[in-house]
Image 1 (tube, rainbow, N blue to C red):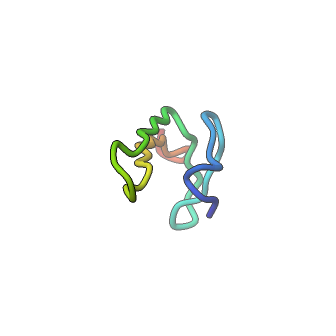
Image 2: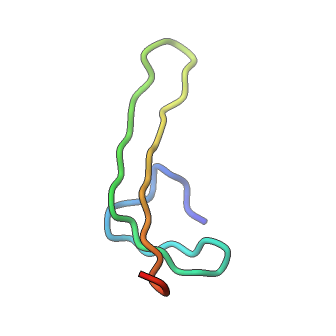
Length: 49
């Protein structure tokens, strides 16, 4: 599985061997030192829609 920073909108990712397409991707940068970047990714299952 690719890192969250490598995923782009429209990419197909396998989750538990089921293909999913990335619908939306939001990234929020850290507001303080030492904090991590937070990624919010919404997928759609390609098998069930």
